[in-house]
Image (cartoon, rainbow, N blue to C red; front, side, top):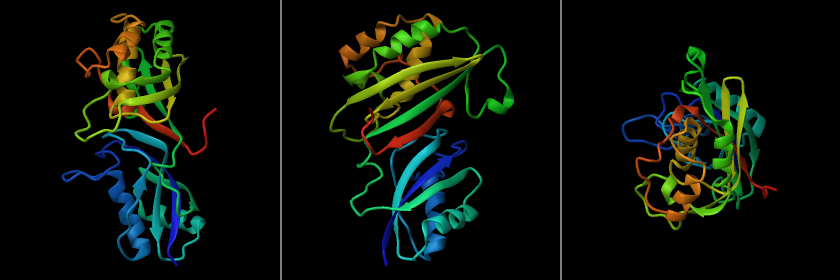
Length: 251
């Protein structure tokens, strides 16, 4: 009997072209589908909750797919992981209702961006933390982050996705900047994000932290809703994690 499954996937995006298929590179979607196809004995298409970029990681990516083989979810996790590279793991699996869609059913997403500020970057952190040697003003970054909260046109903080968008308006529910010793973590929750929006917002907050921009410049750019310029730098992909996808309203 054909059944729909929901899975939660974690992956180290280092060395991958992102989630989706690329003609001349390997994406996470490809390796997951290859593992599932082995179990199914035929092609399997998995649909993801997001489109993560090259080098971006995930702790709680969600996908859905159908199988005709009667594989219990617990067995599916063990069997699929035995076929996947160590950099990709299915953490949880469950049967899903036929009307469930990993992307369209999502109510919100949480991304976290990790930045290490010091004179020297520990090598073991390099794949997962972006390095900054200049001191950062966390108070200024927090004030700047507060301007992102709410419903805005984020054109000034997104890259051209080379596809038609219905709208560039998104809602940011919260945006926190946390610090512990040399480690800064930017935690943002929203109803959805544009192409490279999170990395652009973080890149601008770092410019604010360095003193190159004022916190109020965020409001200025949001109000302008003009295409992104070199003034808004895109933070590197390696520090970004898709942390969680929410399927209930975020309170």
